[in-house]
Length: 139
Image (cartoon, rainbow, N blue to C red):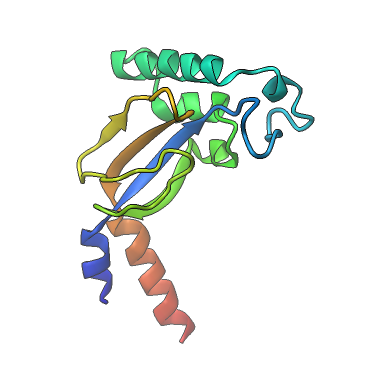
């Protein structure tokens, strides 16, 4: 598959993860001992995410800034960036189990059973072009 074919089918995805008592790993970069996580219920995590979501969609804050401050995922240091994902795939991104991602910038609202907010954005042309150029120079 050529780089141009690949880029047409991928978008860059980011997310914000709030861990809670039911999380598999009860530690994060901002809570290494897991003290806050062990005292956070799933309902509280979803409530926090809904509040963050409202701030993002109202324009009070940028997704990347909130992800950097609030996400328990190590992707927080990259503004929540997860890299490129395939369009219309059933790839599990974080804990969000994305069924379909569209090519336009979309922010997915938190659901009661999930404790992450997903942002799907621009197509991955520049990133994959850089990777293609790098692989060509290594040969």
